[in-house]
Length: 115
Length: 111
Image (cartoon, rainbow over all chains, first blue to last red; front, top):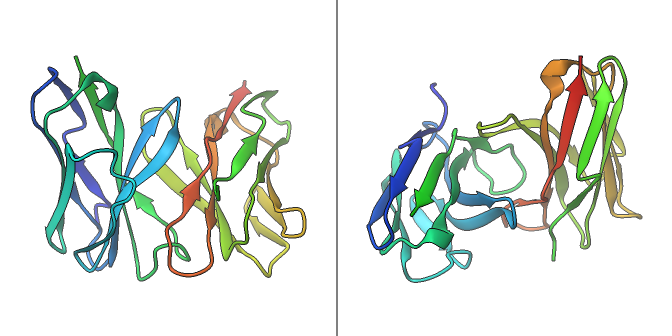
């Protein structure tokens, strides 16, 4: 397996634009997580899915953020409209069978810069 | 907060020396995991230690867990320049809730 695949790797956009980040988890993994990493706040969990169903989205900072998982092999994180404070690295991770007792497999991240 | 806190925030050592990083947390856990992140890359799982274990080894890595003190340590022996990275502890709460990551220790190994 190629691991967790994220796209784009880098995104530079202007304030107010819509941003869509994409993730393909490892085949067979039941859990998918979206994290945001900044120097100030470290790695924050935004939302996670189990079998394509959102379980906890309490980490999503505002209504401007939304995430979907239409099938087991694809998830999106959308920011609309984007703001400069959304600049961060966004990671997708997947795991097999459990949200915390197994290892997480991370993608390489999407570095977002909002001007 | 369940979040683990790593100590020190940054560590610089010479190649061949041992590196020790510590993690403290506040509430009960099911397990504790350590991850490595190279610059510009995603996190990579290193080792998992369960709450009923006290020590675990993997290659040059040694992890200890003291649940009475709510702390863990990661020891990297005979460090190499390639070990330069950030190291994160992640705590797994009881029940099926996700891992919570600390802010990491930045390790620099100088050749």
